Amino acid sequence: MNEKYIKRLIRLVEESDIESLEVSSWGRKVRIIQRLGPRSNGDGNGASAVLTEPLAAARPVPRPVVAETIPVEPSAPAADNIGNLVEIKSPMVGTFYRAPSPDADPYVSLNERIAEGQVVCIVEAMKLMNEIESEVSGRVVKICVENAKPVEFGQTLFMIDPNG
Image (cartoon, rainbow, N blue to C red):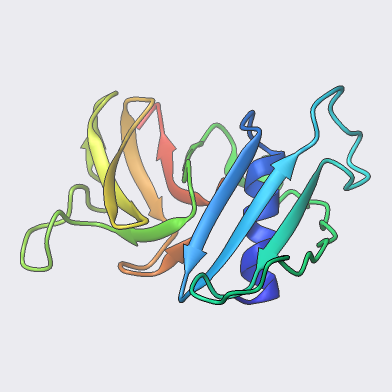
């Protein structure tokens, strides 16, 4: 697992209310534990990660690695650029899909009117297909992610004009 991926996982834990997260990949395991108590003020001391050697290895003591966190900078466009548009954001890290299958039509298209609760896309995370629903009614004015591309937690997927 690379450092960038581990830092993304740490950010995910820090921004949520979960106490710990454990991910296994390619024979390696990472456990991220969030320290309980008052929320940090952004100084990056809220979570730590432990990287464990291959699962099949017979080492009695795992090699700990404490990863520093990077403060999350707001990635949203300036308020005057988006006006009254509403963003539909990814609730998780995963892969963005516009349609339920490669040969199917996309859930929504540009300039299409959508209803509150309507499925707008899928985010695949850990082999699970998670349907993402719109929280508002309106018109799709921008699709911010290409099909089958990775997305991060909190990344804007769609821009919706509720008055459109």
